[in-house]
Image 1 (cartoon, one colour):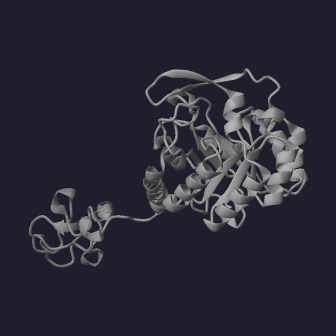
Image 2 (spheres, helix red, strand yellow):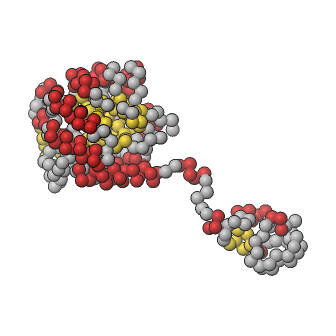
Image 3 (spheres, rainbow, N blue to C red):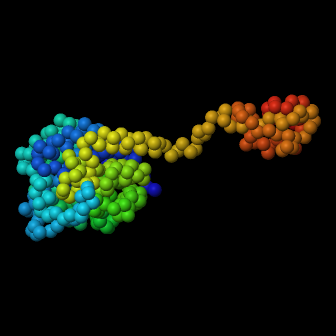
Length: 348
């Protein structure tokens, strides 16, 4: 495995030597500035470090306003929703974006957003966004990726598409001197099925590209995030909603404000439990629990030891049982009583 580069969002470093960055996606679930601020407050209060938005203009993006997206409700019902209407809910005015960015700064939340055009990229640069994310649908929109890279901002690439497209995006970013790159594995589906999550992609991303890997969770619950961390994800992104029972796309797979603290706490526990793989090179067993070599019966001077004369007992603070072969066939210098330890200097 290649050495993974370290990237950063503002002054927060992301990589194998740093804690997992916890980001909550609110761009898909807010319905205006007030709900966006409530979600931001819940993220910060719960211990998340970043919040993610979608800076969109549905009228500019969608020429076909009849396109639909399928999703499953919290009750398991299959529904469809107009993509145009879903995007319209997520729109904020320029003044509202400034207000939201200032509010997130007050909460000390990193501000990340997915732009849908060069105009929204300009706006995000203007308000001081900390990172820009390239959406799954724009991973081969190389002109826009180039425009984003020219800003010098940290770039998060949605790794859902072909690796060749991701590789081209990396080349574009690097050509503009941008090396703060994070590649995000983002399963499809609202919510994603377990068979469609493919968590092993996380290790592939790191091996192939050498940049930090992130995981955006589209599944119900939180378990897949913890599995992703165990596989090496350096950043996780989970959608947050005020009410996961909301009958609209992406709410079912979200967490609610009261669930955020536990989500953060378990994330930190999992990464702490991963520990240091180098521990296998050191002993983790107390000498008291190991075994030493003792005399099984009284042994006279000059007696040649056999395996049947040796008892292997605790504690292991005398001559270790692992060296028993070095004693077989050697003579005893002085008599040894049953139950006494046998040491190398007791033998000829």
